[in-house]
Amino acid sequence: RRTILRDLDGQVHIIPNGEITVASNKTKYWSRVNLDIGVAYKENIEKVMQLVNSEDWVCPVEGKVKFYDSWIEKRPRGLHRGVDIVGFHGANLLAPVDGTIAFFWDSVGGKSFRLIADNGDYYFGTHLYRYGSKSGKVAAGDVIGQLGAGGNATGPHLHFEFHAGPVGKGNELNPYQIAHRHCTNRIPIEMPL
Image (tube, rainbow, N blue to C red; front, side, top):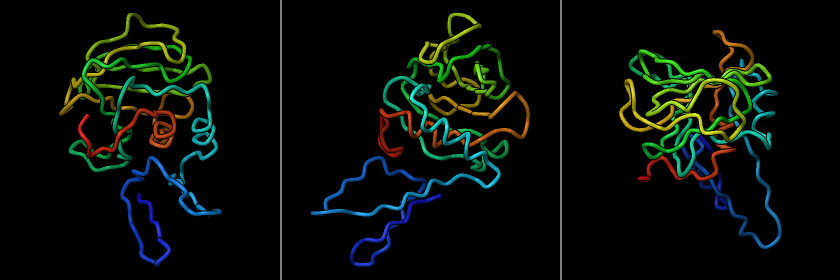
């Protein structure tokens, strides 16, 4: 995954992992931009675009964050099926949507949550420092826990997954574009928090 830009002199610039966060038009009159959002062929583009364009979806980590598109990245335990949102240890974790949350222990990630949205979509997060106050109904923006580095984590981050539809294998979608759109207090991955 990458962004390729060609300047007016014909020079090609390749930016890895779509790390562009701001674009400015410095031409006198007009400019044209072709925007290409990378989504795998098997993914449900309508579902991804619905959530990208949603005004109700909330970034799951409060405060300053950084992340990149790590979907299907090779890891020691297999392919990575989520996005790792890095933030400050102890930062509040927020429900991204209305739904019902349950907390549990995961052998790889430690303290974890499962959120079933009111529309049936399924969210999973792990590496929590603390659980939220209780399992049950939550509204988008409610505090559901605190960011940590539990389990096999090497630093404080939320491993975050999105599954379109009910709990089960095969319906996971890359949450990067959704988080990219809604986590607006974001800095480049290579910068320190």
